Each structure stands twice: as structure tokens, then as C-alpha cells.
Image (cartoon, rainbow, N blue to C red; front, side, top):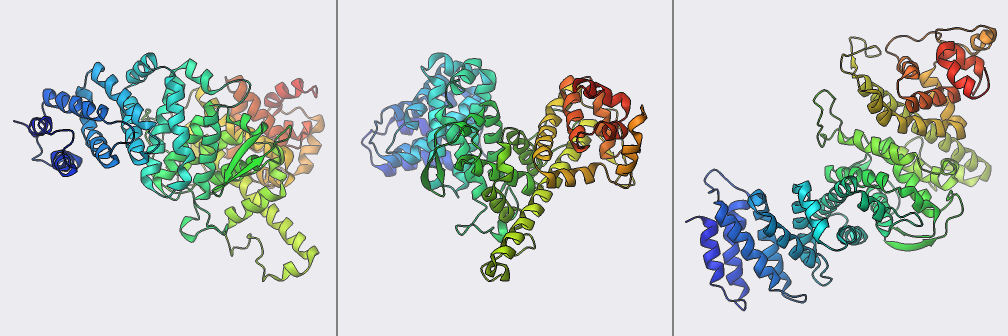
Length: 537
């Protein structure tokens, strides 16, 4: 007989009041043989698997809240191992298991058991989309219960914030809920109410902020081992999943209402004004999102791609991309907020670097005027670096959109036969174009940095742009193939109207909203549509 059948027979003979050691010996075989299977491990029969699942489910239901936490955890741990054979479990037993696990997820006095139960439940839900529909069809308030589990674990994250097990659980919870929201319209409406944001959204925002603040020591200095983000693979994956879910849930509504913000393990009440520009939550989200864009450079492998024709993105690139999507909805006033820039300067430059804030021993602190000048220069350098990082994100995404690869000269790129469809290009490029346009509109330092990167003065002096005021040039001036501006101008004739408008607005802002310069740099044929909309042509 198989190992599972032997274990099942042994379990059936155990009385419910048997000592813990008897239960431990009964499940030790499963945990030892199947946790790390080897070549000699026997593949269990389908009948034995069903018997084992049904037996564990029965034993779990025999426990009530307030029972022995160790025994419950033992049963749940065995179930976690056996879930690798869950494809052989029928619909009826799967539903029974989900209901049993859901009960343990809400046991307040069994914290470890609740985490194990949540992990098993999410594995069952995420395994098959049909299981999600099954769960939602038979479970009353299924979405609310799943979101409550996630909200609870996010709220308790500060207690177990450095454990990879906690982040692993949060990652699966968020990923499963994201799948539910994307597949189920009623779930989106339930978690995205019109009058006020769902409590889950607050928890996700706090969890996202917390992932970034893991990189900061209690004294607010950057830890040497965590100067980049993400500092571990699981933190990066969790950050990406939370950000994706927040994008679906219209998280920016949180910035415009009265909210409770958890910061450094302490609750602070923050009343947000009409535009939310100077709220604590806005400042924290701005710092978190912009820092992730600047510091996400760790070459972790990707989570996976369904299109073999598309290049693989590192985990750092994915953190940048989802952060750019979140940055679309940040209040523009936060970019000029003194507290935001000060904290960003420390995160971007790090302690002791030329761009870092002066220490108390620095001579500049002895004179108020010199200190103000020093801080201002640091803020300028910070904004310049942020702007250039956004340009690098744009350049990477343009290469991805056109599937271009470096040639012999790294500054020249050749077109490939596999190019994204216009609607795909729009989904990829619109966020970073909107963020850059917004940033350049409200910050002259960022405008100068971005313009110098895209339109170097050496190629088109400003005087020649002014001289072209009376010349309707059809072709743009000095746009070498393969350059960044070459692909941007190429997008101005995209078949996607939204992308075409975003690119035109971005380049128009870079040209200081001057019609003559805009026409000279992009060509009259490309510029005329936007100029007509603005009444300048």
C-alpha cells in the first residue's frame, strides 16, 4: 500500500484526545517524504489523495476556535504539502476545503494557523480560475472575506515585516485578489465604491509604503546593503503585485479624504485638503513611488511573459513600470514640497554622497543663508536625477515597443520585424509620457534636464528654431534614425489617437509651448494637428 494510505489508516485509528506526539508521528511521514521529494518518493494514487484530503478536512472541522494551536498548525502544514497534488481533487472536496480554511483565516487567537490557512486557501483559489468563480458563487460576501483577510495581514505586517514567509503570503494574497478583481466586474465595483475608498485600499497603500521603508534604517539613513530597490526578490514581487492591484482600485481617491496613516509603526491622523497636496499620505506615497523609479536597478529575473517575441523585464524594471503607473495620479504639488524633496534627496543620493543633505558637522549649518542655498542645490540635483531616470524608463520602453536592439554602436538602434500593436504601445508608453509631461510642466529643473536629453542643443540651436518661424517645414530638423527623439516623433503618426496626443503634448511642453520651435523640431506635418487643437495654426 502507498504511504498516504498507510498514513490514512493510522490516522483513522487515532482518537481525538490522543497526545500531540501521536499526531506528530502520523504526519511526519507526509511532511518528510513530500516536502522535498526525491527519486524514490512514491507517487500517490488518486484514491489515496482524496482520502487524505478528506481526512484532514474532517479533523480540521473537529477543532473549534480556542483549540490547540500546535495541532491545528500541524494539520494545516500537512495540507499545504499535499496541495501539490490538488489537481486530482474534485469540485465538492475543493469547496469543502476552501470553506474550512476560510474559517481558520478568521481565528483571532490562532495567528500562525490563520496565516497557514490563508496560504492554503490562496493556493486553491489561484490554482484554477474556475475555483474563484466557484468560491464566489457559493460563499456569501466572498470578495469581502478575501479582502478582509488581505487587509488583516497587511495591517499586521509591521509585526512580521522582515520575514520572507509573511511577504510570500502577502504576495499570493494580493495576486489572487488581483486576479479576482480583473475577472469579476462585481468584485471591482465592491472594492471600488464611488463615495469613499474601500478599507482594503488603505491597507494596500500602507503596505506599499512599508515595502520602501524597509530600505531605510530607524534613523532615516539608507542602509549600505539596501541602497537599491528592491533589496530582495520577494519584496520586489510583492511591491509589483500591490501596485498592480492599486492601479485597478483607483487608489488615488485615498489622497483626497480623511485617512489614518501608519508610519514607522505609529498611527497618525491626517486630514487632507481639497487637492491632497500636503497630506502625510501624499508625501509618503510620492517618496515611495519616485524612490522606486530611481532606485529599481536590481537585475532579478522576470515573473514571466506570455509573448516569446517580447524581451524579458527584470524585476527592477517591473518595479519601475508599475511605479510610473502609480505616479500618474500623484498631486503635482508634491514635486515641489520641501519635505518630499528632502526625503527624496536622502533616498536618491544616500548618506555621505555629494548630493546628500549636510550633516550637523557640515559648515553650512552654521549660517542659515548658506544652509538654505545648499539644500536648494541638493533639491535641484535630486529633481534632475529623477527626471533623467524617467527618461531612461522612456528609452527602455520605446525599445521594447519597437523591439529594437543595440547595434555595433550603442547609440544606434535598428528596427525589428516584431513591433507592438498601437494599442499595446499606448498601454506601455502613456503612463511615463504623462508623468514626464506633468513633471516638466511644473518643474523647470526637470524640464531642462529632460529637454537636454531628448533635444541636445548641439543638434538644433534655439536660434534656428526661432528663425524657422516663417518656414513651414514638413520634415523635422536633425532627427538621426535610432535616436530617442526619432522614435518619439515616429509615434506622432501612431494609429492610436491617445498615444499620438500624449506624445505631441510631451514634445510641445519640451519646446516651451512655442509653436515655431515645436514645428522645427517635429516637422510641420507632425505638429499641425496639435497646433490646430490649440488654435496656434
